[in-house]
Image 1 (cartoon, helix red, strand yellow):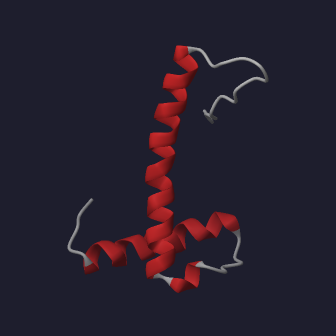
Image 2 (image 1 turned 90 degrees about the vertical axis):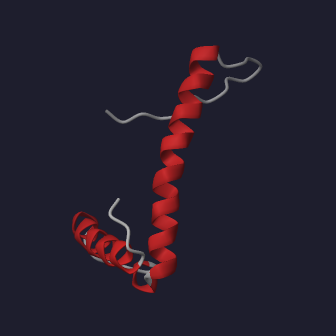
Length: 75
């Protein structure tokens, strides 16, 4: 399921559960954002790519394999 962060209502505060949810959401999102930034910096091709969004996953996977190979990482 798609999870989104809770927005603070006008004149109110978020509950402790909502704040905890937002912290987890932000932590997970940060991993994806960092990976995206690393791929874009390493592979300039990904800056202005205009192919079908469903196919970009294949390009990103290939770029990630190359990146891991260059940095001798397996995960």
